[in-house]
Image (cartoon, rainbow, N blue to C red; front, side, top):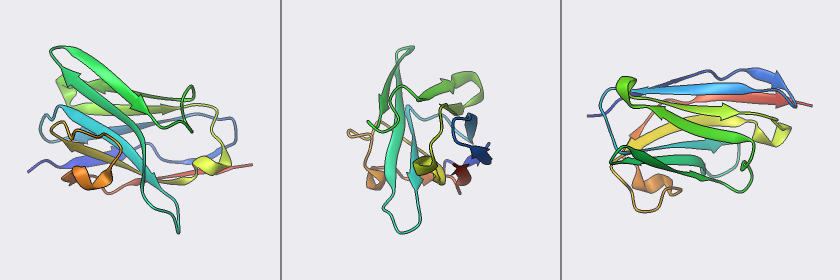
Length: 123
């Protein structure tokens, strides 16, 4: 069973940056970041697919150009670099992992989840 632990969440002013980290107990070929604000559904933020030494990344339209996902395969760690943060980015951020899910942004396709890390952006 794959276990994930996230870190890096914090409170930050609008325009600031944070880097989230997620460490897995076992290698999977696909990992994603999701977020959920109170009263909202969980939504995909970014995903990364590693195959044959190369990776393909995916982003929600709302974070393109601001957020960047990357993975350290040797340490089974995935990162989410978040720049130019906005108050609407405030949410609990979750790391998810599985074999290639087919569609990256659907939470129900992932079997393994971290406990979440809170990101709060103030104006």
